[in-house]
Amino acid sequence: MAMNRAHIALGSNLGDRLAHLQFAIDQMAALPDLDLRFVSSIYEAAAHTLPGSDPQPAYLNAVVEVATRLAPIDLLEALLGIEHLRGRDRKIEVRWSSRVLDLDLVTVENHTSSDSRLILPHPRLSERAFVLKPLAEIAPDLHIPAPIDKTVRYLLSVCDDTASLEKTNLSLRTASSNEPV
Image 1: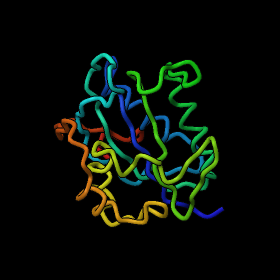
Image 2 (image 1 turned 90 degrees about the vertical axis):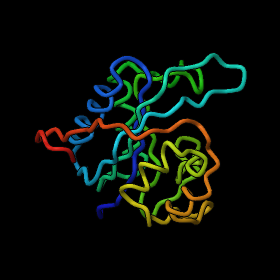
Image 3 (image 1 turned 30 degrees about the horizontal axis):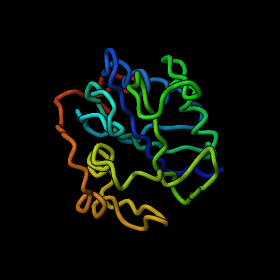
């Protein structure tokens, strides 16, 4: 299978948020048939919650670009496995609740999917500044296929997400070195 470029959004708003994101990077780097290409800056973002829900702690968010031979569903399963290693169980959690680790497969080059287990591109990508801003750092001209059919740069310019979002001075490192990706 050919290498495909994929983008993964990372988030954490419980415990040592930076350590949780670093854990995800380290685990992804160890996956066979996956190469980390780029990692965005880390942003702190207000949690998106359902109306009437209790406030939640702020998230740390980042986006990574990988090259992978994994089929999109296999990549998703690997990401869910990484979340599970950090204690997340999507089967029992309340939707939009606080999370130790959240890994969302945002795009996979040349792939769309409307399967019940995997929707590509991510259905709320265009509504989330906390994904678009870091994605724009590493792939501003990435074309998001239909039904969105726009570039990341354009989506960020028209995104009406007004939740607090601040770039931090934190960084993530690869598993093979002490240098930022």
